[in-house]
Structure formats: structure tokens, C-alpha cells
Image (cartoon, rainbow, N blue to C red; front, side, top):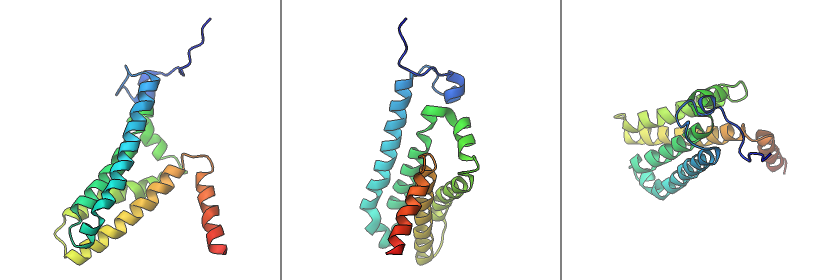
Length: 160
């Protein structure tokens, strides 16, 4: 008897019926491509940081937020939207997920509000910073002891 190297997946439960014909390897590849592309877009947005500082936040904020959204949605290849939402609302990451999603939305809203330039830039800077911190904390919640390790690093840095 030959053993199958792929884990058995219930297609409807695994990806919510979005991509039931995809194999496990294809789903992992789809996840990896979206995740990496999302963070490449996010990192590439820093090419436009000076434009934001000079008063044109649209290129930076748009790319930064789009990259984060793409990376966040990448896990739909692995578990589907319903299960991803359920995982996001798990007690250990619920508050972080709400802050993260709220910042993603608020960043886009503030970007297009007719505010004074200085106020808009300050709000966007704060929202992007919160978005960054919430995104890191959210992603670390999926890594065993990830949050604890980061806290230890910060504690060692502050003790010195």
C-alpha cells in the first residue's frame, strides 16, 4: 500500500469551497505567493515614504495597506474565508485582529478625507504605525511562542 504524501483535506471545509479543485501543494503555493507578494508590496511602499513626508501620502499608504491586505488574505488558500475569520476571532488574537482590520480600513478612509494636510499626514502616520504593530502582533499569534519571544527581546533591550 502506497501512502499519500499529501494530508487529506475536506475541500469544502478547508477552503470554504473557493478552490476545491486545488491540491494541497497548489494551495500552499498560492498562500506563499500571495503572502510573499503582499509583503514585497508593503516593503516596496517605503520607496514612496519621502513623498508622504513631503505631503503626498497616496502612493505610500495605498501600497502599504494593499500589501498588508494581500498578505492577510493569503491564508484563504489554506483555510477559506469562514475559517480564517473564525481563527481571527479566536480569543488570543481577537483584539489584535480587530485593531489590525480597523487600522487597514481607517487608513484608506483617512487617505481620502478632505482634511488639513498636516492633520491628515499625522493621522496616517499614526495609523500606519499601529497597522505595523498590530500586523506583527497578529502574525506572531500564529507562531508558537512568537509573542512571548518578542516580549523577551523587548524586555532584554529595556533592561540594559
